Amino acid sequence: MEVVKNREKSHRLNRVNFLIIPVLVIFIAIFLYPLVQVILFSFFDPDFTMKSYLKFFSKLTYSKIFFMTFRLGLTVTVSCLILGYPVAYVMAHVRKRWQNLLMILVIIPFWTSLLVRTYAWMVLLQRQGLLNNFLIRIGIIEEPLKLMYNTFGVNVGMVNILLPFMIITLFGVMKGIDRNLIKAAMNLGATPIRAFVRVFLPLSLPGVTGGGLLVFVIAIGFYITPSLMGGLKDITVSILIESVIVKLYNWSFASAIAFILLIVTLGMIFLYNHFLGLDRLLGGEGS
Image 1 (tube, one colour):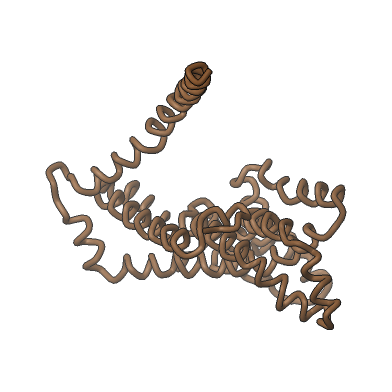
Image 2 (tube, helix red, strand yellow; image 1 turned 60 degrees about the vertical axis):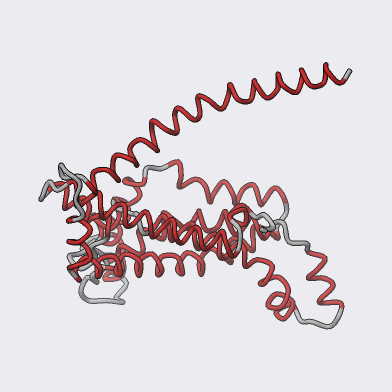
């Protein structure tokens, strides 16, 4: 009997391994191989050299671009949190059918091309766009506001694109919070606001940190929206990499910049996993 069970277990493991092999092949071909190529490009030009890294760290300009990129990522993350937290809170407390409807509304933007959404914001925010024309017609302003080709326009476009990621992550955590804890706090004399601040808010912090990390990591690698809606002062790391490749045709230096950004991003993820646990991104309890 024991032999039969062992054979069945072995067959199941073989089937699982057989299914994993195609996934590993695709992962290596699409992700791992290009990544290794980028790393090799950064160290060989054509012989082994560190000049690309020395060039990066010797000029303050590149450090400033990294700083501007991280500052943009931070402002976008905070904006998404401010806008997304109330939406996720409402979604977690309405009835099931309304939850489904709201979730559909949240994920609808994923069905539209990122480029199309960026161009839509450009139509809305340009000097002769719908928003400026509307404000002039109702008499609030006399001259068009500069809402695009600056940091404001980039923030608006990126928040619109990244907000669903924050809402979905927050909702996943909030949905798992036991409402009886809030009722118990109110039964013990806490006001609704105090119960929210002392009970619900701390329990939702894994969603705040998880959603914040997810949005921030995506934001610092953004290219399309900053390049289309940003100005000369809104140069991000992704725009820098594109410029180095297209204008200077310096693949080694561009690869070095990309690898540095990757190391910084992985470092942030590692710190998050060490202190909070990556499973909290999906609403888990963490380690």
